Length: 482
Ligand code: NAD
Image (cartoon, rainbow, N blue to C red):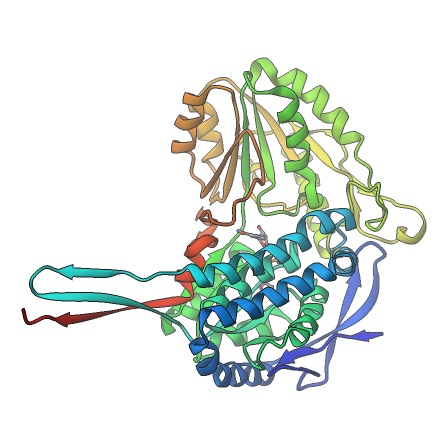
């Protein structure tokens, strides 16, 4: 059975303890590889390697760093099919989604930040008649990048690429639930001649390996994406050391549909925004609010389209809905469907574990589920489920739907469907979220700021925001004798 290795100081190495964790294929329920159960010693080795690499990497000129990162990007692109299959097996997502979204995005992440490294500029301020101030932007040093399981290589590289482009050296940990593409990335980094120690990948549990990264005194910043509770734990641990933190956390995104929307476009996109990746995208809309005149029509058509989604083997090209990521996650999703029933919800379609015959008969699949009849402030409508479950609720006025939308503790993204431009602006301005899509969903421009408000996190990723996060400003004031 494949034993995944850590990537430390340019080498693929066993964990210090030689202990391993099981890695499951969610589509079959079987263990198919072993993950290093790394501990403080592995993190210490990784930090030492990153510290040794930092002086040379941070002083390398931007064009050289660009060339190396572009080589990594090109190798990911070369292995697109292999990586997409690995992602699908590890995560349960359909291979076609991984091929269209996850892996191409990892290619773009490296490309985007490789080029950004060559376009950064610093500020100067003239105090007329007295002085010139110039502001240096210096890489922080060794930084930690910790990522979740839902978009494994996509989000892992979304952190690593800007950190490296900024001149930091990195100790990174992918989710222990989906480690494989990070392992394959470490092999590609060796092939790309990324200097030893610049990137170190330590596999293992959050509470052990992840926590050791956060706790290490020489790790200057933590870029984290994951659950809100984990984010709070990390903030608590990091605060006394005054580490810089970027926290991209949970969501409970609203989808506001007005009767004047472009109906066909809205319907098609709402199926995707609800159930892509089995609803396990932080940006999926899980609370759908529909203006009352459109409600019955929407309900009928939406349920018909959702019921037609093909649940099946993630490796089969016709599959729309793959497996959810793990058995505990399957149980969590089913427990929320049960709760929705207890709270008075009516299940319009789905609602059960799905059975897929053949190779996947023991896999963890959930039927795409649509629920109506719930109050906006019940637990099902307030807590993050992060699975293929959405609620639909009618509304009558803008004030009412804004109250519903803003009632949750989260504020990551929101989607508005209307042809009324003034209304779109009005609502976008009042909605409590970091990202608003009008008449679209998941349309990403990597230059734009990405992140949430309220319990969806602090800080912004994307564009130059991420490069700023991984650097510190230093102002130099020079007095001029005229
Ligand atoms: P998680 O918080 O359980 O784990 C995320 C990562 O943190 C993993 O690598 C894990 O090993 C590590 N970790 C866990 N405990 C840790 C600790 N004490 N110290 C350091 N590291 C620790 O999240 P998950 O279940 O992997 O991911 C799902 C969550 O991620 C959902 O809540 C989802 O909304 C969120 N998410 C948010 C965004 C965003 O951009 N805001 C994007 C994707 C996913």
